[in-house]
Length: 56
Image (cartoon, rainbow, N blue to C red):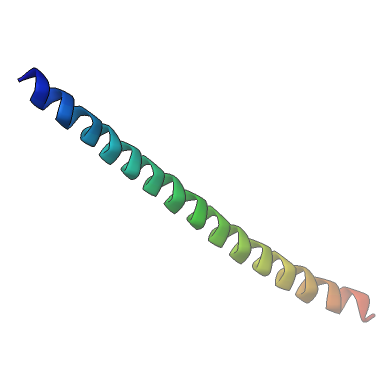
């Protein structure tokens, strides 16, 4: 029992670490993608809002 627990414990830790890393990578990629979309939207919005005000 002790040997089986010792063998299964590191594998469980590795699985939990892999899941944690995957979740972190997913969150980071999601935030980067949303940040890019937000920046693009803000840039387009600022350009669209500045053009009519700067023309007259």
